[in-house]
Amino acid sequence: MRNDIQFLRGIAVLYVVFYHSDLGLLPQGFLGVDIFFVLSGFLITKLILEQIELSKFSFRNFYQRRVNRLLPALYVTLILTSLLSTFFLTSSQLKDFSHQLIGAVTFSANMVLPTQTGYFDAAAEGKPLLHIWSLSLEEQYYFLLPLVLTLTPKKLRLAALIAGFMASIYMCFSWSYATDQNAPFLWRFSDISKYEWTFYLLPTRAWELLTGSVTAWLYLNKQISVTRRVKVTCLSIILTLGYLQITHSHPNIEALIIVCCTAVILLGDDLWLSQNFINNNDN
Image 1 (cartoon, rainbow, N blue to C red):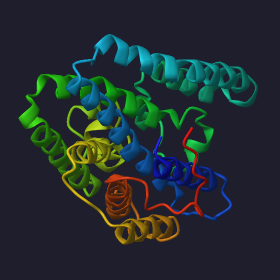
Image 2 (cartoon, one colour):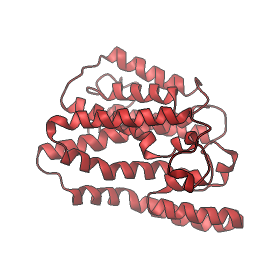
Image 3 (cartoon, rainbow, N blue to C red):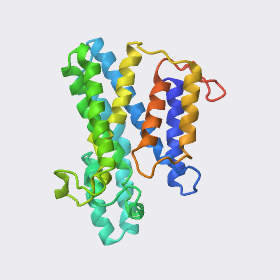
């Protein structure tokens, strides 16, 4: 595993933990999730493309690995959370929790939670499985990505990924500013606006994962070389954005900047990262 990827993971974890600690240390710490999305898109696409190139890709093996990696920890979390919820939640909160639990098990939590609360609403504190939304979104992406990469001719894969990125980012930013309009088809489930749906749904957040996927393609094909100075600059921007608020909605400009900076860091090797930042371990 590349050291800089581990380092970015560490930053992302700290961002999210400090944000939810309510200490006020990282008011923009929720951007750690956006870093995770890019890393996930990069790693999973790199894995799939390498196996396709070697004619070793298997849908069965791919999904089996996802199951082995995710489900044990997920089920332990769900069981413990369910037990604790019976002691701490009210009857109405338990009813909502049962829907969250179904969403978590079926990887559709990101479609259940918008019908209950916005991520930044005060009511979100009473949603024990609120954070499962990002796992559900990633799993939906993992289900679709292998199909796209295997069914698309090799010469058109980059174009397909870029087309998906463009469609997703257009939907994301057009919905972000449509605060007075309900999302088409989704109004049957909730009367919340397009802006509120934008935070949770795969079509409006896939551009972040697709940024990682495009970066993986460029990385494997050695299309772009990035200097250490540029990468250090991008890292500085990422660290600054944890404190700096540019807009009052999410995903928005901050997400776009931190996603692009993460992608730039992933291009090329990890030799730019000084051992003063992270210990080098070749094992």
